[in-house]
Image (cartoon, rainbow over all chains, first blue to last red; front, side):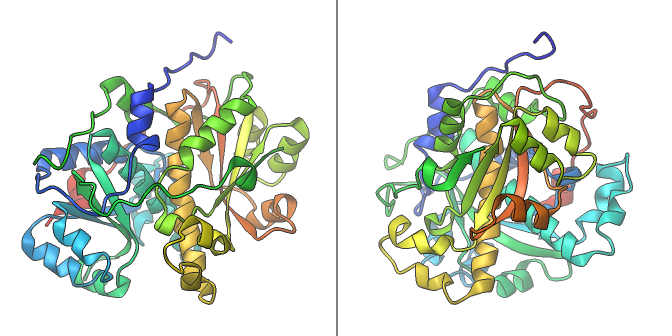
Length: 201
Length: 201
């Protein structure tokens, strides 16, 4: 066993911050989220693993009143007030032409060719891996002491047209970040038990 | 600002463990991963947010030699040795009928009806949210001091038929967990810079 070394596990406070005590937020304190925080957040997210390092996620951080209203007009009626009160809402998309960057991102194989002529495989890979990256995003935000409020209730075609026009990016989900308040937070909803969803073979 | 309270951010060691120094592993020490660890892992993963708490991910933890060979036979030639050497490889799937649990998981709305007659929406929701949960899984494993080796190179139809026959579950990705060795670890691959993938609006 000399070839490996146990990495230290996170302490209980960190596990609470990431998973056990964290809550999806629906209302937000006005405390702003500055550029440096957004850069630090991305610098964590970008290190999470993706298939062949394909890194398909793209991010728009909606922070001005003007951009916020453009987004709020295109989300579901229950999500609009959340977007309006959040200091930042990230639009997390995926570049359908992510594979054009693979010669640089994964230089030791011709990974671009795995996707360039297989649109269904490219679409599935972009969607799966940008969703993984959204998972990293939520937990990276919590790592930095921010709360997260992910949402998938919005007019995708409308958000795509409003924010990604002229690009090859499509929206996957949106996620508010900032310092949440307790307003509207659900009592903790139940989760499925291990034996309902998992088996050890 | 009295309505909110800053959660403590994780310390630098924790950020290294989760994001900055963690590496995808391709070879594994024989150290086993016991049942208690798998339950603790799931107890973290299950708390991560999903849309309407839909929780579509399902998990098979492949740990016996017999199950490992069945899986190794259905993954790409480059992934087979990784599966064979890993103490556990999780098959992470999604239940295409996840919405049947929504009356229990999201009791304050008729969320089942949003999906039950909209197979495309159900499929997209299952895939997006089980991928988010896979992101939580990778980071939860790291939180516990395990390494992770996610893979999407496998025969999906073959894995589905071999492991999920008679269920409504389909495979999303697989992920080895355990204590990785440095064998075959790539030099750190480049990442896209903030300005290439993000904008602040």
